[in-house]
Image 1 (cartoon, rainbow, N blue to C red):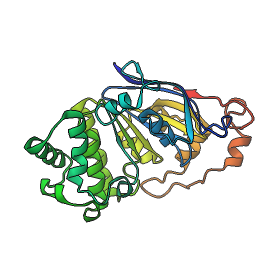
Image 2 (cartoon, rainbow, N blue to C red):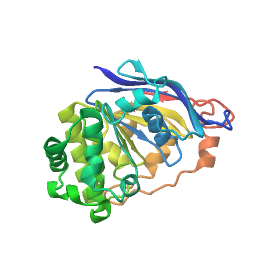
Image 3 (tube, helix red, strand yellow):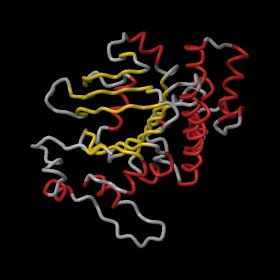
Image 4 (tube, one colour):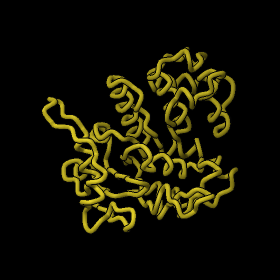
Length: 292
């Protein structure tokens, strides 16, 4: 199976505090046609990892390590070379579509920007492609002339998906694309993304804090805690046989359908006092990673 993305020992630190790790020693691979979910609570480093791949970190942060896309080291590329990859070969669905979309431009114009920049489409050909993309994500083509505030939350998220897949990328990064949506729309978005992944044979990196979403869409799972990967494995292994205490704590927060399960909030003091294999979660000791 072809590796589309290979991240090796990625770390992210603030420029003014290089010894403070926001992401630390992260390594994983993504394959064509597979969905890998990064799961963890807010602040665990999920989005920073994705933004590092896109080369979109704040200028107050610096990334170290290797990021290879199709065998090419992209951390050393110039801004112009990286722009030729972003949107064309790597697409990204950003968090909060209402703030990610430009409120003063129509959604059709925003979808068309990457088509013109990367594929050179203009005129009728551009309009036809925009209409086809909107249809593909379940939005009537005539809504191309609508502004973001004229669309519902689910429709805006679908516009973001249309933008991200416009040039048929090899890798799609979805950063919590269903967080603000109701469960019905969430199910529709997850189904749509899975269908697009299969149809286009994309590798998909799906960022979430919701194990319910992981159960629906993941092939493989990466669990992050305090900027580090603490457990990896197949969906079945991580959900049915979690090994790391933090993974177990996250799963203990997930309600069951019948409502009989006692929900337990994460006890960070307990995690620090009762780690797996000699103190993996104590900040004064190196973390022990669990790989299934």
